[in-house]
Amino acid sequence: MTRVLRPLIERTTWRRWAHLVVGGALLMPYWFLAISLAPLLSIGDPVVKGLLLLLAVPGAATFVTGLVPTVRLLEISLAKELLGGPAAALVPGSSRSWESRVRTGAWFALHLYVGVVVSGLSLAVPPFAFVLLLAPTVDWDAGFLDAWGWQDTWHQWPAPVAGLAALALLLAVIVAAGALLARLAPRFLGPSAAERLADMQARAVKLAERNRLARELHDSVGHALSVVTLQAGAAGRVLDSDPAFAREALGAIEESARAALEDLDHVLGLLRDDPSRTAPQPTLKDLGRLLEQTRIAGVKLDSEVDPDVEHVPAAVSREAYRIVQEGLTNALRHAGKVPVRLRLHVEGDRLRMEMSNPLGAPEGPGAGHGGGRGLNGIRERVTVLRGAMAAGPDEECWRVEVSLPLRSGG
Image (tube, rainbow, N blue to C red):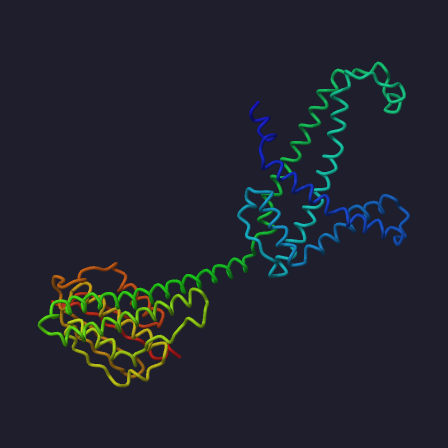
């Protein structure tokens, strides 16, 4: 009994019925158009003329209407809201290809014709069933019985059963038609293979942009916080004994914090698509300031930088700056204030970088902490530029070697 009554109380069934009724109502103007064209049809056979007026002309008109790109947007929104089921996963959008338009035209015609059938049954069956339900309790007029070809002795007691059966059959038609359209909607209104590929490419581009912004935040802000932590610790230890160095460290802290805020403002501007909030990104021309800030933090930095690195392509220069910055950050976080050796030079058509620092227990405030994303960030930058990277322990040192093709910045 529950299985029989469940469709009666399910909200989805009546929402699908509303979807079908809307389709039936939308077909009426096309029928009126066909009827208005009736005088122009010089067809003597009434059957052929009726088929043309009821099926062919309205069907062609609905299909042509479905070719309009915005019809797909409206039909998907309607199916998503009322049909549910598989149709609920559809993403509203206009047709972007002729293949999508043709499928939408076929769906629009199917929706309207199935809807008009269900609408007609919904108008005709309930009154007929009502009459059958009341048949045993009504004293029928002889003229009424004669009009239907019945005798005044016709057996009326099975009529209520027939009325209930008619209502049940109507409900079954509504449920079946709604379920059928809900299942077919993704086939007719879903994205084509080309549209799915375009959507996947758009998501890949968006994901790559998000990863790039995450690397920018991690490298710039993470480095600044690591350096500031060490600089603050160094300034605190020599505040009384060496006020001049303490003032220099505090000035470096201010500069590092300001640079981090500029980088953060740049990334936020990209996230908000606000060109006024973006700023030029640092390149290898700004490497001297980065190295000096690291030295002020108390790191013994042995650097050898080829002057030609300032003339490498901008894209390579920006990424190389971030790679050096992240390498220094990793040394500060995981090894502390240990000596760091940096070699950066141009060889032919490649930019080569080598950074190394002794292995050992972390020392100093802020050392030994980190999320472990530094090497992954460097590897992602190198991969984008089609370069090569090697990182790992080398005897008693941790060594990172990077080679970037200069043409990758073209």
